[in-house]
Length: 127
Image 1: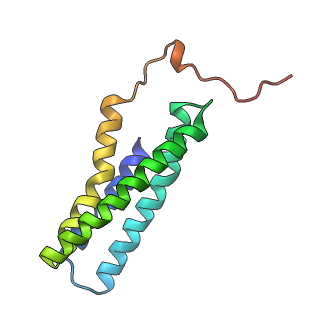
Image 2: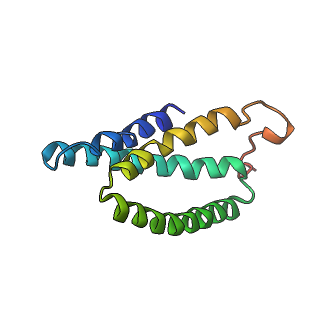
C-alpha cells in the first residue's frame, strides 16, 4: 500500500505539469510521473494475483480488456475536450489523480480479514 501511495503521488505530479511552462523543470516532472506509472504496473499485476491465483490469467486479461476498451472511448472524449479548450491541462490534472482515487477504493474495499476464502496457499507443494 505504501508503494502504491508513493507511485500514486508521483503520478499526481500531473497537476503540476498542467501549469508548468515547457523546459527542464517540466521534463523532470514528466520523468517522475513516468517513474510513478511504471511503479504502479507491477503492483497492478500482483493485485490481480491476489484476486484469484487460480484464474489469474482470466482476471488480468478481463481487466486489461476493460481498461483498453475504456481507454479507446476516453481517447475520443479527450480529443473532443482538447479541441474545444485548446489545452491538455485539465486532462493531465484528472489523469494524474486517478491512481490516488484507485488507492482510496482499494483501501476502502479490499478484504484484508483472514478467513476461509482468504487463505494463502503455496503454488507448489514440497514433496
